[in-house]
Image 1 (tube, rainbow, N blue to C red):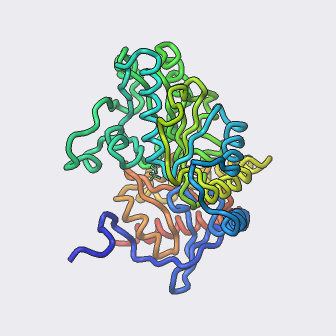
Image 2 (image 1 turned 90 degrees about the horizontal axis):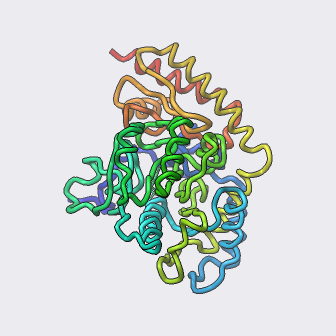
Length: 392
Ligand SMILES: *Cc1c(COP(=O)(O)O)cnc(C)c1O
């Protein structure tokens, strides 16, 4: 008999009933150290008073009015994002996938309005993940994602990650945009080198192609900068944001330059919930905390310290670990087994990590992880590796 919850997930038998900062408390009382943050979502940790107060204050006033009316919380969050990024304008969604959807529409509409309606193609890369809608799976068409789901949405070209020569050859007068994660998350914490991001920007400038960064996972402070592309000193024309921005509340956004957004006039796109007062009040609290002076300096300091400790773990446990990847608090340990097996072994040490492709175990702690918790995390990762190595 089919379960009452559609069985599309393979879930661990853990029942968390409470969250406190970097800790998750199981029904049976065990305290798990959370290095997953609900897949890079709980950016400020669980039940952070700053976020809870923003939610409760707004919940007591007004939850939802629809976009038929002006929403001051939405305006304030958009202004905050515009002030802190390349963007001139923002559209709010409820998820990352919806941000991908709008980006696809926005770049095509751009070229339509510029009198080049044939420029519809969107170039994406192997190992990418952009969500689960029809457009998003066409942009990252792995067999698992697309098999059996009928004809794929046309107009997408998937190229090998990092192959700049193939990319140069693929950009034609049909290309609308290049869509890329500056650091791949689901693909296994693959960091696009700064030089390649710069080359991408140059190629787009030379050909007029729009550059779209999917920073749904690597953005919102996770890399140690507010957005990961800041490391390379280049900016996109359009950027997708979600996950961390709501700190656990379902919230996403598309940020764009005035030019890139020029086709999206009144009536061309919308959302019932997107940007509602509750979501935006929470988002504003999160973005305000992350952009506070010194906050990201601490993420960078702790991220480097964590990475250094992980290098030590790899050296100490060569049978289990292969290498460390990533930057800031977006780290990956490449393991010599199925990553899900490592993650599962971690549960016995009351440790939460997240598997990814390419045999990588992701480490995506709350940006507020303390030095003591960092040391505890390293110790639990080490204990997990020793447990695995001790098994016959
Ligand atoms: C999670 C994720 C998405 C999809 O976001 P949802 O909120 O699950 O729809 C898209 N792109 C990247 C890079 C992601 O990590």
